[in-house]
Image 1 (cartoon, rainbow, N blue to C red):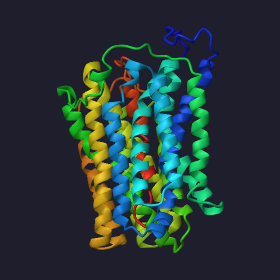
Image 2 (tube, one colour; image 1 turned 180 degrees about the horizontal axis):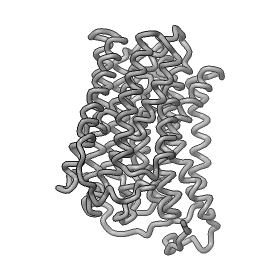
Image 3 (cartoon, rainbow, N blue to C red; image 1 turned 120 degrees about the horizontal axis):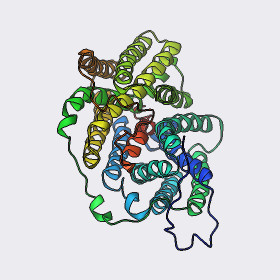
Image 4 (cartoon, rainbow, N blue to C red; image 1 turned 180 degrees about the vertical axis):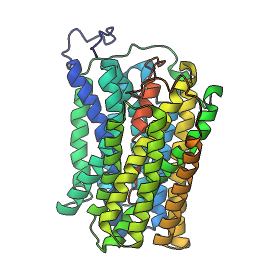
Length: 450
């Protein structure tokens, strides 16, 4: 089973300063993932309030979403592995400070420009933190760390959407209270990180690590072609929930409740997290196949529920689609990563990041444009959902073709770190992103189209 290793002393004051026990440090870092993703989904129920106060169009909301997603991607591609060179604590402390700044800007925001600035800062801090947190938890406990990396992000997304919706709906000062609460959480986490023991010795190459590396190893090209429709479909689904679904469900129920958008995202991300947890020991290809089937069934059920104005079946479909999101993305990642040698993994995962985040951000912005200048809310939703189902069906056709198992697929991947991993932060970053939405990112702009 797991054990807590002994690390070299890298902090000159470590012998004179009390440090958190390793178990406490582990759960602190897991809480950072949850809190960062919760913060990313916290503005979700507030977009309708902002839109009413500032008078911007739904397209503006989707642009805010796209900017956040691009900021996360930029940070992942540049500083995502920086903690391997300068240590986990400096990166985490900087990221927490940036999150706190974003909360202050959101609390005092008086217009769209401040909202965009806050979301950019938030995206950069989230992208920077997930690599350090993921690798830091693996430093302390590889077994628990890989599980936490896989489950915590979707858990944070779900919790943030639900908690924010409840606060906004039932407590005063809706555009301030949730951010102030998160600011307090980040202050406590910053204090905890300051008391953590450093688990990664500094090493050369920090500047070189900032250069994005894109590439697909020859051994992984066929698998990536097979997985690409799955990746695009699941992240486009995240974009759908980030751009038009909150308005759709309010239309289905005939209610102006700000809680509904949070509930929809909670159902999607929560079922995705549970799926990752339950299927963590299964072989990657069957997980991807199962996720693809669930994605088609879930989106189809959701669209039928919209046509028949059924709230119950809408949430049933959302839960099934969340199962598809969790299973499809995790299955795809766990199929690809073992096919790359350690020195090729960074380029492959960077390519996956680009594909996934573009699939989430660009369709969301296009959807917002079509709602305003095209057929309207419900027709756009149907067309978007059908496109997701078509992509998933293409992936299903590819998966249905029997082929020989690869060496990577023969590995039992209870975690998302393949057997050939050198325990670098790259696999950790991918497992954290598996939720991100968000995801992550779906968490963010969940109200992109009111």
